[in-house]
Image (cartoon, rainbow, N blue to C red; front, side, top):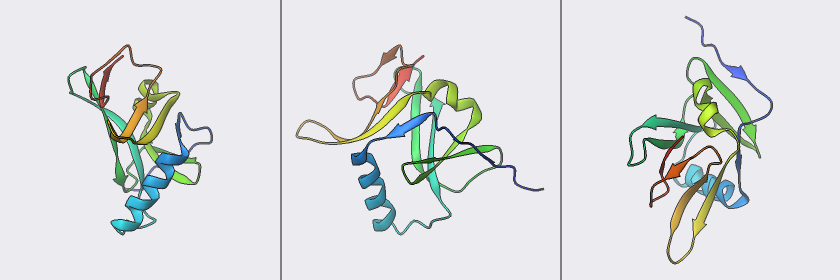
Amino acid sequence: MSEVIREIGQAPISLTPGAIRELGRIRQEQQISDEHGLRVGVKGGGCSGFSYILGFDLPKENDDIYEVSGVRVLMQKAHAIYLLGMEIDWEDGLNNRGFSFNNPNATDTCGCGSSFSA
């Protein structure tokens, strides 16, 4: 079976410079190969209905692949409707440290910011 991967031009998400720096640090620290891309998606669950998927992964069949500010992003086509226009940022403040998701499609979010409803 041949792998079907679509390389798409305009990405549905964006990454801030802080997120790009942190992703580069994680890639280097964990020695993640260039074959891996950043998987962005959603899954059922979390306190608001959906939770975000964010992590390095190998491309899978039927993935859409985007180039976002030099980062190869992998996403299942069905997830784009929930993530269109989302910005991923890295926060490193006193009250919060980690990736944050600014999702214009979310009608409600939880206090931790890692789950949403649409």
